[in-house]
Amino acid sequence: MKFTKSFDAPNPIPNEGIENAVSLMKNGMLYRYGHIDSDINFDSPDSPHAEHSEVSKLELALGQYTGHKYVVAVNSCGSAMFIALKAMGIQSNEKVFTNAFTFTAVPSSIVHANAVPIYVECNDQYVIDLKHFEKQITENPDVKYFILSHMRGHVAELDKIQQLCNEHDIRLIEDCAHGLGKRWNPNNLDNSGFVGHHCEIACYSAQSHKMLNSGEGGFIATNDEKLAAYCILAAGSYENLYKKHIARPMDDEIFENIKLEVPNFSLRMNNLTAAILRPQIALIDKRIASYKNKHNRIVEILSEIECFNIPQPVDASDHVGDSLQFNLVDFDREHVEEFVSRCAEKGVKIQIFGLDDNARDFRNWKYSFDAMPAMNKTADIISCACDLRLPITFTMEDIELLGGIISEVIEDMINLGVKISGASAK
Ligand SMILES: *Cc1c(COP(=O)(O)O)cnc(C)c1O
Image (tube, rainbow, N blue to C red; front, side, top):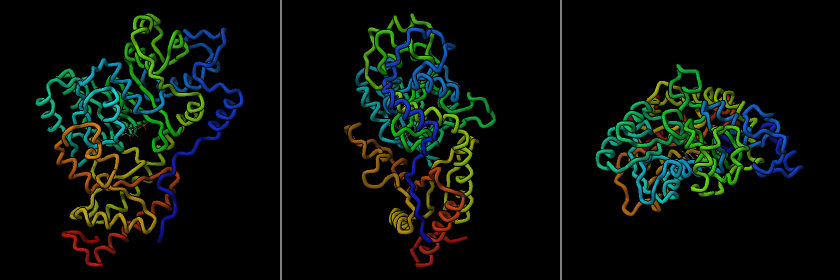
């Protein structure tokens, strides 16, 4: 048995996106503010949207999906988090809480803002450890910001985190790079039930490994008009260009009051990116349904194997399911590595977060600290945590094959007498 499909296959661009992109290239209107048409009333969100730029229309469409009033498209989620911190007024050398288990773009956005990340341990459900968060708050009473990362779609106890932040005047940003379409409250089918609504600013990614794919891309989403105005200006809107946004606060005063105080960081999204993305918004729910089916089935297959431990989400909600994380009970690091290499021989690509130069291992974020942070629990968890991508291109048959191969590898290891205490095939 050998698996031959790619584990890195991104979501394909729908035909409508390809056609939009081609017609844009023919007329060359790639700059989001390049569109000049004196008949458009840019002050009105009801003005004919067909006349607005692809980026402006995309911002409106994303906000309608996520349930945020204001959306600003930028070139990446890392840029979105950087601008979010600047909008909140962060000063040089201020500190920002963030997850010790996340992707390097998160602490990098903090460093980009001349600030210092203060890491919070993760627990064995791959989310922020609340006890450690409380301890960090006590030990670092000067910290006023928190970028909470929903790494790999694992969502911590949002209500409690929001409450702690409120009590201690900590301003919350949610990193929703893996959170688009993920419900915190599955019983709330309104879009306020999505993650990204416990914070002041939520940030999204359209990098190829995420739900929406434009290669690169990101979004800032908020319901706060002052923060929205700052983010629009800082992303690269100068003079009166903010008027071309349709997912913006419509009171021009808010912009005029701060306009000359806000740097232009030139982190805009261009129309080509937006043209590719916009038709994908309507596909999010369909993509989630497809991911979920396959995620549920692989979990079912692997749960038959005794040594598989797949953490339950802390909330009651389902996973979006574009990847699976698991631990192998009683496997030490050496055995996990052997398991991964045996899977690789059969075409199944699994990564260990805490291995070599993995960008999801905090020990590799040396740019962000002078002394290695003591995150023993996180180090323990990621040193053996396995990560399996489940691209949209996989079929149910692929999932059966994948499950079969992984089960076989485990059985082989046990039969060959690899000494794993407690592990046996059911
Ligand atoms: C991909 C990712 C990001 C960064 O997104 P970019 O758009 O590449 O900047 C941030 N956080 C997490 C958890 C991610 O996986």
